Image (cartoon, rainbow, N blue to C red; front, side, top):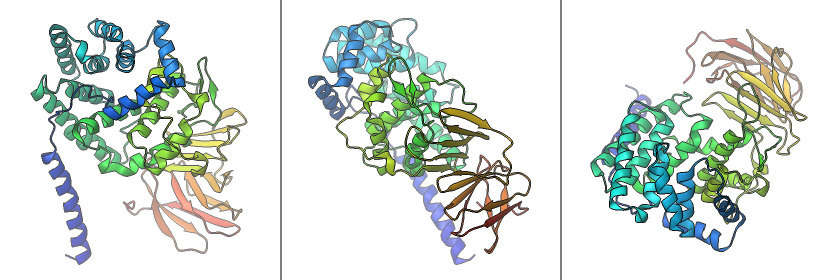
Length: 453
């Protein structure tokens, strides 16, 4: 065996040994005090300071609760308000709702955790039994929301049902996260979607706050890229809803703006920055979030805006972020001409090419391979067959070829340079760096060689 191969095998063995060790040494017994979900001492101090200062986020949350508006998530909203305002009548309202027929597991767990001092022994047993029974009903479910519900149940019932709590937490961390999600992301499978992000961030917070385990560790690159993926994945022109403005996430087919999805995506972004305010990319995201015109004021969004936003956390200007993001893990491409709202935007997602320009979204079909779409220092070509592509502008630094066969190997021949083989990502995209010269000619041919791993 060659020394190089031995070294690679030894390094791989160390990785697997480390993962195995983490799975056997992690302690899933929770010993923290109520409230355990999100409202640790530091966040409680921040939120109560917001109340004392009568911040705009507190004022709108207070006005929402005082107006007796119909609340989309009454258990969550009443219990949060009770914790910050010290008004136990709201805990009574939350508990009564949680004991009702329409209460969902996630909110029942939040009420059980945040209103624990207001619970009589009988009502505490009733809610604990309801939470445990509800977990049994999702035993066959494996999605992110189901995992979040298991985590919430495990966290709030620690000390009440310790064996149940430990078993559920072990199931989520070891079997679901490390056994399914992490390998899926490493294998470039789309196991986490945009709609999963709010629940995913709730899982991250709950587990780190109570077990000191950071689930991001095996796939730090995915979470490092997440802010760029989110910010470049918005259409450039904001949508004006009845309550506030939203940036609308790009989706296949475009369609009508979805303010609920926009609100939940903003909630996830606020939660992400609250989870880690030190990482550079997250500071750019904080700079994006702290614009009052996008502050959520709806009955759905206002409680989350108050819970997660930190206006005292300095952010960085997202104008310093690159205007291109190629998500080679999931096979998506996003480009902008600038960060202004009148920018031209290009997106390629789920095999569909979209361009947003002059306030209008177009689905692009039938684009000839020989005619690039220029945006900034990038040129986008639609590949088909064995295309030959010409880059006439030396300002183009990268060519993206879309519409190729996902996962296939391609021989890349740039005239005047040595041929090499690249692998199309899961969306059928190749990223090719171009030399600084006029009239660069690129030829592609699908290779019979196995794709480079």
